[in-house]
Image (cartoon, rainbow over all chains, first blue to last red; front, side, top):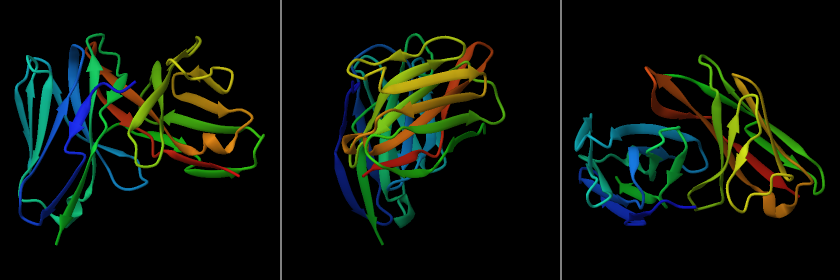
Length: 112
Length: 118
């Protein structure tokens, strides 16, 4: 079953602009992870944020987590055409087993 | 980072036959691995939890007799799609997580297997 929803489902921006994707989930979590998937390919891990963290940065990526609202956001700054992909959030529940429940994903298109 | 290898990366089989997909953790031991399925333009759906040395735990709606999971060693889990039908055509992907100091870290995913049943 899906944990929650992501919005927007699709996002199209110009190179250089920022892209923000949101993720909501339903149950208590141990951590939330963001992944990227190029069309028809495997998943690439981007960032893991734990339930006691509020914000995390990695290069051009910034992730926030609000456990009171059960939501997270992924910000990609200064986007590039190569950032075009699908982005998924995934939650690991309180049991912290590595079992992930994925959101529906956001398809990002960055136009050169 | 840790590496999870999945094989084959793609397979075409005839309806009614069985297909085995392998998932290996190459540089770490994984007592637990997970199998997901992804239909075109959709998200990943968890199918089952593969437990080393014991029976797999299947998610609701997933037929355990159709999707046989074996986790005979700490580095290998296999998923066998039995009596495959065209509706089983999908992208199958496995994952395993590292445990450091009792804390589960990020999940590492295999490259995925594109199954096409004709």
